[in-house]
Length: 95
Image (cartoon, rainbow, N blue to C red):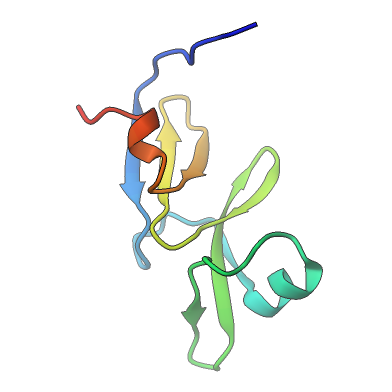
């Protein structure tokens, strides 16, 4: 069955450090050693203590880590997700 996504309004914001778009940070070493995802393109932030962390948002499927150039999407119902810059403007129209 083919379906079309229902039209919804969403806030689309490119991720930048310091905007508070993430729900938390995970040590990059834990992301790598636990083998959760491909880590080459993740945003990496070095803290004052030298540790490197990667930001994420919480979704119903668990943590979604934010990659370089990603957008954080917040749908009108409050659902949040991450969309890569390669697809965001194929899925969303600017208003």
